[in-house]
Image (cartoon, rainbow, N blue to C red):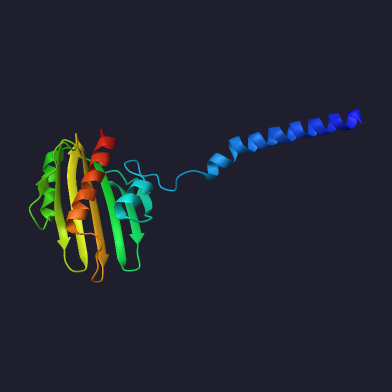
Length: 176
């Protein structure tokens, strides 16, 4: 009887060690994040787009910007969020050149990066889009947020400006 109890105790001890090893080595690999965007995560973007956004990250090649793209599809349309970051020699000139994509005059976003501007790039019945162009030292970043839909955009220009301003605070903070 005593030898049976000792054998069961040994078995439980070994089984316990195996369970702990499994938890340490196998479970963390299955719990990693799906998106590796260094400036913002899917959960934050999902909150900005009011729905479950799916993201992708592209490191970019030498001389090309790194990008993060997020998409949230609804029955009536699509909401998109995009970030690009590149390192350039004359960052101020690059920022000024990029603001030419604005359909309306750009507004300064104070206290975000070294200089940051927001503007509307599209405003119509089926699409609304806002753009932020800014820099942190020699890094130029752009953030665009847009919503498309047939007759019901759900998010207005003011909504998008508010959301993109929040995102630009986080992105520029992560670039410092």
